[in-house]
Structures are given as structure tokens and as C-alpha cells.
Length: 235
Image (cartoon, rainbow, N blue to C red; front, side):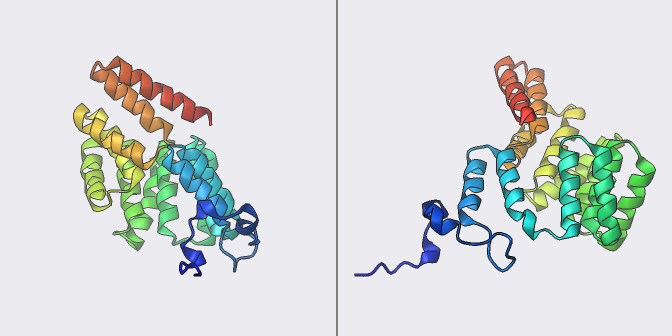
């Protein structure tokens, strides 16, 4: 008797290499290679978040529009602390679509990281005017408040976002940073532990966890978090 299950029900991990690689990734009408997507998801589940993200970006790169290519390159620069390069990419994206509010929010956070608050305010205010309810815009506004040292205001904004979107990694990460600076260590620990669940490749989150465990006099856990941070930062 023939198997009644369809080919679409087969797990990606079980696809033979020859079958998984039949599609031409350069053909926009063909979906990305499922074998490689399965590998990316598997690495994410194993806690190898940065490797998973790199694979996924590599898979999707042929499908990027010029606008998304600039934004994604800007985000990669931002993640690695190359804020001036990030700004260049976000400005290039802005030329292609001046009203892309998520790009404007990213541009504001990059300017904020360099304490260029005049430019940051201009970008985030434009984004707020265009779409005040957009989650990325609200996160960008809160991050900018954090950069300015307005920790209490930033915490209120980020808490609301985390409640609304419990899977938003950057919102949890920056809320943890804010709570740390406000001296609310136990709350910061809880939020930052959620942040590393959402962003397992975020070495800064592990480093802050180390600082928080140090403040709790838990040297063993602190050392473990610092080790994770060093390992991820070398990738």
C-alpha cells in the first residue's frame, strides 16, 4: 500500500542531498534550499545563533532587494560595533526609500550609539510621524532614550514593548541593560536571561549577565557568562 503522506510532510532534515539541492537558489521562483534552512534552524536550536543567522542570510541574499541589502549590511555593522559603516548603509537605504520607518529607526539607533543625537532625533522623529505605532520605531525611540541616559523613561517604553511582543529580542536586551543601570538587579537578570533565549548569539547580553551575577556575588555563574561572551565575540 502506498504511503499516503505527501512529499511536503517530509522533514527537511530527511531530504536527500541530491533532492534538497535540485532548486536553483538564483531563481526567484524557486524556494530556498530546504536542506540548508533545516541546518540553520538546527544550529539555532543548539544555541549557535550567530552561525544560524549567517547561514540564513547567505541563503536569502540572492532574494534581497537593494533596499534590504543595505539595511541588512547596516544591521551587521551595527551588531559588530561598526556604527559609522552602519550609518552609511542606512543612509544608502534611505535614498532608495525615504519613508521606510524601520530603516529610519535603525539609523537613529546607529547615530545614538555615536552620541550624534541631533541626527538621531531627526531620523526617529520622522519615523514616528510616519508610523507612530510601528514596533521597530517604538524600540528605536526607547533605545535612543537609553543612549541619552534617560533610563527611567526608556524602561517604561521597553517594558510596554516586551509585554506587547514577548519575542522581541532587542527590546528585552535593552530593557535588561536599562534595569541594570537602574540597579534593579533581580529584574535585570530575569529580562536578560529571556534576551539570550531570544538572541543566543548576542555576546553583549551574556557579558551583561556576567556583570549581574557578579553583583549577586555568584562568581561561578558570572564566569560562565563571561566565557560565553568571549566565545561568541570571537565568531
